[in-house]
Image 1 (cartoon, rainbow, N blue to C red):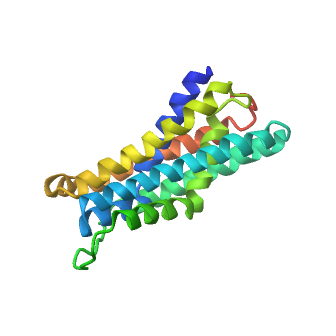
Image 2: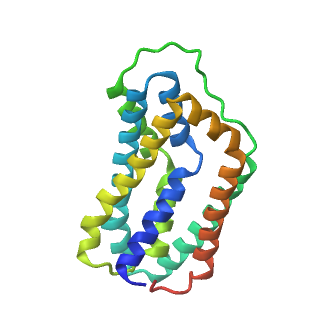
Length: 211
């Protein structure tokens, strides 16, 4: 797979992961609903910075090790695939459950605090680290060209911060929020199916060291 195609596939996979319901989604939505649109946007910015951190760790540390330990590369793909299937099953099972937000709490808006809440939520979530590791192991060549190291972090920031900006804008507006909540079950099931398909791909191609 050409490096440019691999990068586009990675970004698409990370967008699907960001769109999957989880603590990051709930935190951004809650801040947008219960505090203000500005707080929601600040939280989204924190999520984007967290994504850049994970991409940097994956690019600078993970592949140095994987380049010399082939069995670890294969093992990570299998483990990542199993985890993604597990995550997809959780998303699917929770698709019918409505999101619960506490909008009765009265809290002063503080975009700076909301930024740090978003960043810390992203960095403290081990599932995000595993997701990034499995995506990179599955799709990025073992010896990516130099330009990948410069192109991926800002692109990933745009994916993470961009998606959560959309979430913040939607959940701070009444009509889009109502539409999402009405169709939540179907949206979540589509996301779960896509994540599960990626997990199966990791397992099926685990023996192929070169992507």
